[in-house]
Amino acid sequence: MDNTKRINPNKWLLIALFLWTLLHSSNLCGQNGEQDLFIEETQLLEIENRMLYFYNQLQEITNKLPLNTAENISKTKQQVLAIDNKWEIYCQSRQSEIANDDSLLQIVANYQQTKQALLDSISYKAHYLDALANFDQAEQFITSQDSVYQQFYETAVKYSLLKQLAPQLEALKGKEQLLFSDLQAKYETAKGITQEFNELQPRFLEIEENFIMLKNCSDKIQAQAYKPLFQKIKDYLYGLAAVTIILMYINMIQAKIKALKQARENAKKFSQMMKDENDYPTI
Image (cartoon, rainbow, N blue to C red; front, side, top):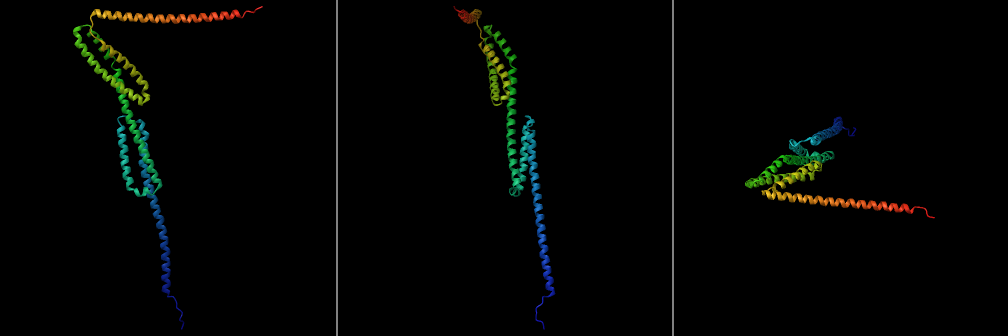
């Protein structure tokens, strides 16, 4: 009787089944790993595209910003804030994926930098447009006062002819002083804006010229007062005498300068003549 132990054929079947199951499970694990990696990469790509969508919206607004006017600059800022609100909500919902991916973190950095630069540009643009509007208003106001001041001056001269019109003259002076206060304020506003934005300098020079003319006219208006006819004639003669003295002084100075030039010319000619005589040959 053979006492050698033999393996039951059923056991061989169980072993083969176990090995097949083990091999098949390994293949399934490999396939599931590749499938999970593909799903993860697809999700990251989707997140990246969504983030770039917000970023590109900021870029479009940045490119159109130079064309913005005072009417739509506020609307542009609201658009940026709306985009940023959607960005924050989306990034919070994908916080874990973004934190673990360097390329997504770079997009976040680029977005934040672009957003801040855009908001700064919008603020500067709004400030410039407001300043330009104030400058235009000051320019229009100052340049439109020539005829007003001409009428003020003519009326002030008429009021100064009669003593009975002194109250009307003082009232006119008070009205002119109020107007000049507004002129002064507008001028200072334009001056301050020009110091900040140098490109407005040529326009400010014209404003300054008009303002100086109006200031001179204002001084003449404020100087008007009733004087008797004899006093006016006396003042006129004094003024005429002063002008005559100034002209005489100028003529005297011009004569002295002319005489000095002539003396220099004569000295130069004499020196040249003496030089020519010394050049004769001697025996």
